[in-house]
Image (cartoon, rainbow, N blue to C red; front, side, top):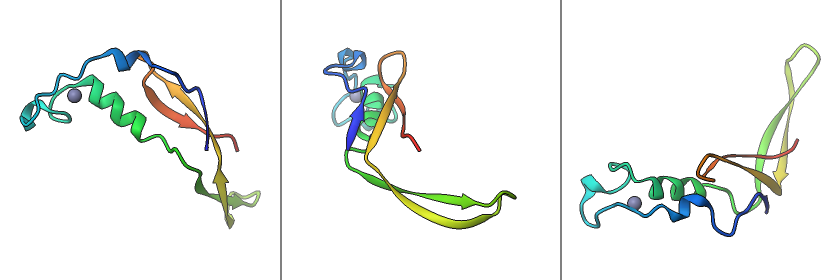
Length: 91
Ligand SMILES: [Zn+2]
């Protein structure tokens, strides 16, 4: 998997985790810990090639075939803290 838009250190990584260990109520996701939230987003980024199913449609928009493609390259979309809000791949 090739990932475009990687950073050595994103801004959000400077935000300290404010979770209290062993205290569920004060631990993400119950707490508003930005560090853990952004970490979770980052960890959800696929690090390995994955497959998607595309619908092949005729000119009337009817699905005539399904096609499986392997995605080998994605581009990260970053938010204001350089946190990963989404990722895209080209068709
Ligand atoms: Zn945390």
